[in-house]
Image (cartoon, rainbow, N blue to C red):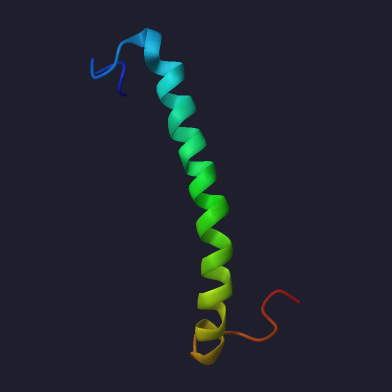
Amino acid sequence: MLAINGIIPYEELFLAFEGWFTENVIATIMIVPFLLRCVTPYIQQTESYVESYWK
């Protein structure tokens, strides 16, 4: 959509995608383990947690 709307030139499309993808991977690697570590105990104490859901 960025190239179609003229926001970035077609020549820079791959570079823009590469930067976007790399930033998302880095953010995911850094944020998800922290959230799993900190949020899981809270979720387990709520009524939305189901003990044997994945078994």
